[in-house]
Image: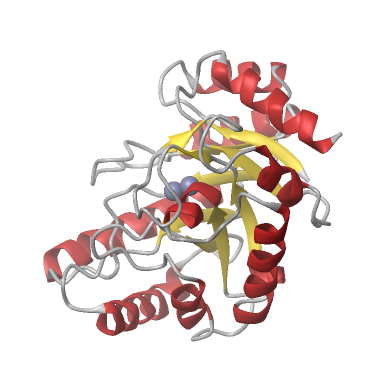
Length: 278
Ligand SMILES: [Zn+2]
Ligand SMILES: [Zn+2]
């Protein structure tokens, strides 16, 4: 497995990569632009090529691109849906220029039109977009905390989307803080074993391609998305230890999205995870 962090927005690309490399990251996740804005701007292929080469030189891989939070393929608003599709397309193209294999997408919010309609709309949108996506980039659906009308907090909902496509078309990025808030007990060895069993039977562990390793400030089943430093939240170290010690494929990425990214907390959280691996 490979361990990394979500890259801060500030500080410049090469500085940030050098910094995460210095604290021992082997993989990294980034936003392709403003995570809360609709506009990605025109890509600069030369700049992205330079960044991709720099990552290669630094042996940081895989690069994971996290799409903007605004994208909602389950939106009941046609205008919002259209903008979401465009931004996702731009994100996939940018990921290809970065030579990133994965774009992570929050499953979506049905906005009152209901779970079934929301899921059907996500499937339709992906089906229509697939032929335009770069073949080197795979979309990973991220499980959510399930607040409001969020879809994808339960493995069954992710499975319904994944199983509408040939196996391997899409993958899953699993966030431990979101799972905890959605009611999956990942805080104990038994909880992790049960969770991985469920994942295997409902989706298939071969489709789990990245993990966001985050502790949670919120309680189990609270549906509240509040990340915490590893071992300092409600999930605690026992569950993380069990999760890390599962037999993951070579190169499998674990990304920290803990609070105060870009500060010395990154090193503290990385050290905590590494100590659990020993
Ligand atoms: Zn996310
Ligand atoms: Zn996440």
